[in-house]
Length: 261
Image (cartoon, rainbow, N blue to C red; front, side):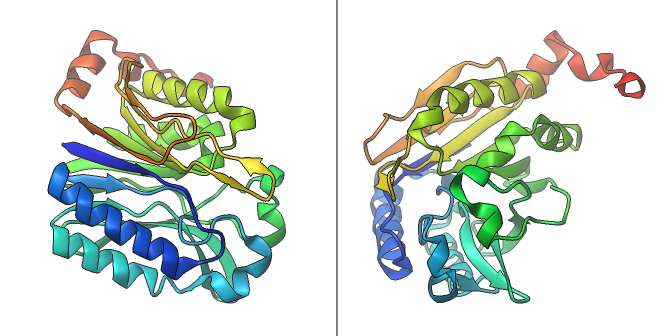
């Protein structure tokens, strides 16, 4: 299962310009790499322009959902749609969307854990639904968004429900870059899953973002890592069949004693 991760810089508060960037990237990446799945970062339509949400957020997921559906169908590719600011029921959410290669929405997720350091709780509402596993090309997977990475129960829940890949989409700052790397590797090792993580680069409102998009195998090996600051495409093919082997060699799930936790 070949993945292409778009480690992009985001134009603040300009959804049309960011959509154009993604469309251009998809056109070139599909010609050059032909991935099965592409991955976008968190809040890629606007960046963290939270005071301007009323004017820049999607409304009930549109028009960005329709745009991504069109791109998925046109290019015959699964899209991990990063996340975007989304207004629904008079509240704003940080929403992720997963679209299969037929252009069908297979999963929506509202970010549960909001980041105090980026003032998310002042502007956004945390998701109320439990994370769930979805399927792409017959492979079970899950998604979490940025600050969710610091809460290991979330990824463990996905692994216990059959996920073999967990996608992490983020705007993770350079100031905490070492946490990003360490937590991604930990989530892969402790759950014996592939981690496919997409982070942005660039700067906004005095915050530098760390890049270092990563693909990590169930042993915790970093198969590919993006740079600190460059816009780039990180490409890697996952051998999903190895997940079962890793879990057989180190059978942590059968050794769990949850009644004592």
